[in-house]
Image (tube, rainbow, N blue to C red; front, side, top):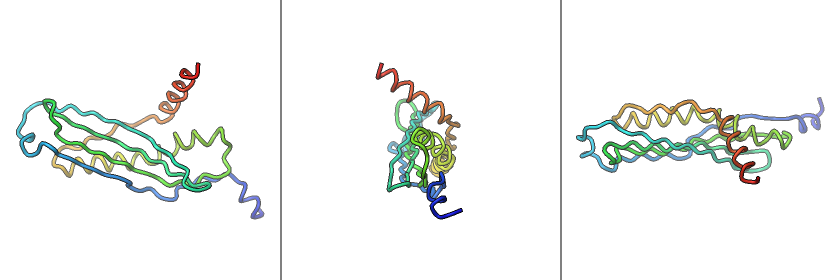
Amino acid sequence: MSEQDTNTQPAFSIQRIYLKDLSVELPNAPKILLEQGNPQVDIQLNIHAENVVEGLYEVAVSATVTTKVNDKVLFLVEAKQAGLFEIRNIPDDQLQPIIAIACPQIVYPYLRATVADTINRTGFPPVHLTEVNFQAMYQAQLDQAAAGNA
């Protein structure tokens, strides 16, 4: 295979997975630790992708976990896990699904572990983020965009 052939072959590889941002707050400690009640947990997930340089993309998945007892914040954890991916010579119609589905599926398990470990270090039982169907999320975004254009 010539060098030219390898330069036009589709390529997908993980360059690095890393923790990009992490924040934990217990704004009402220590008084909130004395309150009784069932905690309410709210989890927000986001995906962000950026073309860093030609053929190199950063895909980040972030989670915000807010746990309250009696409408007072018990703890708040914000974490952003990212991956740097080399993606070359992929047809345009296949590039977006790779960035929106395949890359987040690779990064997400690391985010789940980071969030659970961070919450565990606060002295509370860890919150385990549920599995996410990134393909369904991507399809919902496409459907929403199509509905918006209609």
